[in-house]
Image 1: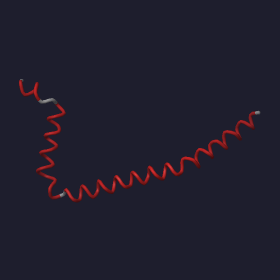
Image 2: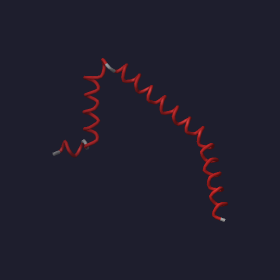
Image 3: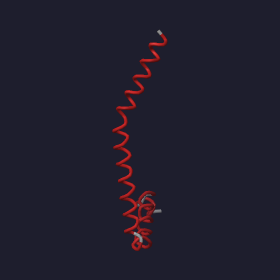
Image 4: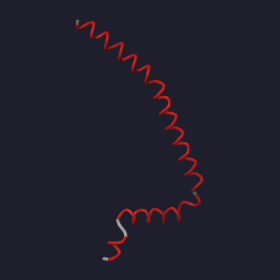
Length: 73
């Protein structure tokens, strides 16, 4: 009972994950870090591409909206 009061659920989860990483991951750590780096690079690239395309999309929608307004009038 005292143990439950001192250590919460998330602390126990963290400790379990830490033990698993220490026991299983050392042989695969370089591969996991490499994959994580690739994922981060791809995410940043996609974010940058989205930011580059956003003004064009905004212009397109603005042109379509103004066209629709003229047709309604």
